[in-house]
Image (cartoon, rainbow over all chains, first blue to last red; front, side, top):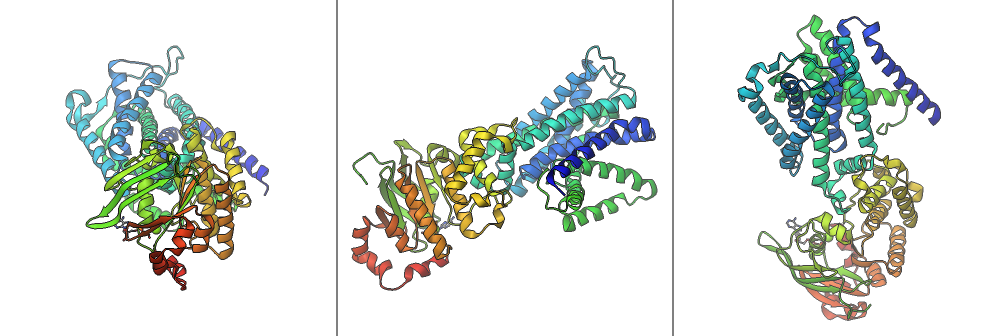
Length: 322
Length: 263
Ligand SMILES: Nc1ncnc2c1ncn2[C@@H]1O[C@H](COP(=O)(O)OP(=O)(O)O)[C@@H](O)[C@H]1O
Ligand SMILES: [Mg+2]
């Protein structure tokens, strides 16, 4: 197949998937609006994680901290200030970035397993704070009972309607993903990939590797915070579970499941994760077992993940990052 | 060579100890702009350690490094690179999963300050692309530009690393055994290339090398190291006839070739 044809097929495929996503509320059973909302939000979370892991090569085990803080930020602003949602989301992204800047500043100096452990430790601390600081976070109950506002002043979207909220989520995530994609394809993104492969060489090219790692970590924190900000109005609560360390595993699993070497991999991974969880828990308790087997297979035989493997199979050529 | 000019690099009393072991001790060396100084000595003599200190990979235990009149002692590698010193490594040090072109682009975009741009498209960054293309051309690896770096031959990887070294537009270039592990053909190619670069007058070179033919063919001066210390410093002619050097390395045996095998 020629390159042009391949590209055309890719564009058509992407357009079809997008159209399908937009059409979910009209064509799928009601229940799938909720599934789709969750998939899209967690896809953004997993993609933000993959900027750090798949691109910059740092395995962070504390990503839920930024997601959770984003959720609390939107929930608190909705509860106390009743700002339009878009402003809440901005606050969430800034909160995620700020927390990532602090945690990253202390963590990126370490390599590999120490970095992973430190991000895990900081993630636990953030959970501890959310759990204990009752006057602000309401402890184990989390922040609930907030009313939804308009998306932006005067647009009049009824966000209480799950279909409307889903479309808002989809729109926000598409814009965010486009921005993230731009970052991945930029010169900055290229340097991150170089750092993942050989940080020493990058330093000897004259770049401050720590600063680049910190920048990637902070940007990822912003997008994770945004994902959290979208999730809180959907769940009608921001709870400590959202920043529990076990939640940090989810974007890791989704990214690996979908394929860490591809921009869209984590989104596919999130879809698989949520759909499989829904279907499998429907008839068996063994969801963790199935997930475990699947992950083991991915790591042992399909390192490119589901998306990467499918892509390679479709195009029959070794996949570059796409 | 003109050693009466202010030196581009001035090394004073440089020492590095690992635990109690002195890998380098009391090295003094002034390098004039645009000269080529070869550093020779058996394995373990401390050549790489000396490079590691000059390039910021290791902090000296003692001594001072002055580059273009500014102290660079103990600076981080990226600062020393920014200051104008670039190095290659004894063991190939590239980005294996990127294409040859991208490897060079990273180095070019680091120097041009493009590296921090998150809003551009790397594969369409014109200035970077053109400069990278010119570099792979200059090192005659243009035909490999789209190949994944891990898959090219050993000798070509060394050339690629050289392209990355030059991409930062250094004034001082440190080459650590640039021809080690190369076939005689490749050795000749690289030697000719280094000669051309040296003759261009753009760079000052420090070269460590085991191949004496290469050393004597390229060097304006030679520093002979032995157990971390400076044994002799002089012109190729002086070094060639120096009794201690003759005894140690240049006897009628092929010791120089044998020495290639480790580290
Ligand atoms: N990181 C290190 N830790 C401990 N010893 C080292 C280290 N690097 C080099 N050495 C020791 O320093 C001495 C000089 O090594 P090196 O500079 O690599 O020599 P050369 O490059 O001339 O072969 C050797 O004895 C080596 O074992
Ligand atoms: Mg050496």
